[in-house]
Amino acid sequence: MRLLTLLLIISSFAWTINAWGDVSRPSRDSFTMNGTNFRVWYRYNYNTGYYVALIEFNRPGDWFMVGWGNTDDDVDAWVFQLDGNRVLSSDRYWGNTRLPVRDVALGGTYDLQLLGYLVQRNRTLVKIRRRINTGDRYDKVLTRVRYTYWAWGQGPRLTTDGLQRGRVVRR
Image (cartoon, rainbow, N blue to C red; front, side):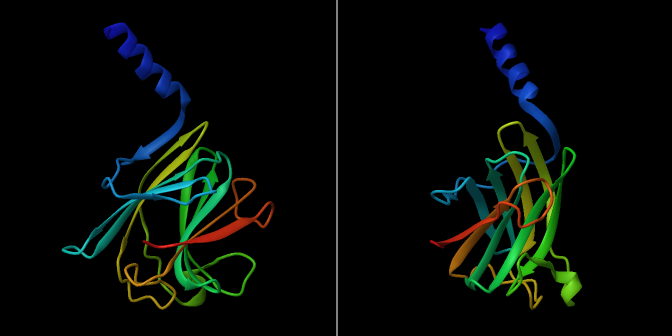
């Protein structure tokens, strides 16, 4: 039995390409965006004013985005790109542009805190933290949005190549 357990642990590490920080689930609360490659575990902490999310994306090697908003041309976008085996996060706004633009380029602030990531051959996990209400005009108050948006494109860097985009109604 011990040998079987050891083999399972070793095989799980063989599938891991790179890991950094905390990728534990913040709670059992989660939602899956049906018809997509996303699952999100989340937790609102009203005492501290923070939202913590663990995002699972099942298209290894591609960039991806999870966003929040009430209309398709006013989205608070969190973009994740790959740099080798590292995950880079960016706080962006997706208005009437082909791709999301960095908040700071528009005069906003960078409000995401990357807590950890795990890059594997079959998926990427990213754990992120942000204030529920940042006060940034390009960010949404996370408890007051109607839709969760998703997007991804082919390749590790943010481009329109193979761009897929959609939304689901928040619960």
